[in-house]
Amino acid sequence: MINTRALFIMDDKDQDIGQALFREGAFAIPIDILEQKLLLHKGLVMVSQGEYSTAKHQFIKCINTGKSYDPRIKKECANQLRMILA
Image (cartoon, rainbow, N blue to C red; front, top):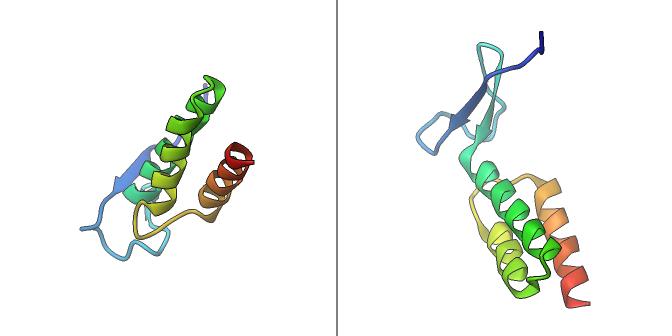
């Protein structure tokens, strides 16, 4: 049997977004970070399809989205923008 853990999604109304919260074994991920991850992946799909203009807008939107952020996502967006603009 595959060992899986439930994912708990929290929004701005939840307590102290800056801390990692645990709910019965599930890791809490702020909605801002999930949205940024989605935008990053949308941009990567656009790059793979050769639609660089649309990809650029997705990466910029990802960088500007949300109050909390994952630095790895922002770094990857910045790297992708550098490659597009080079």
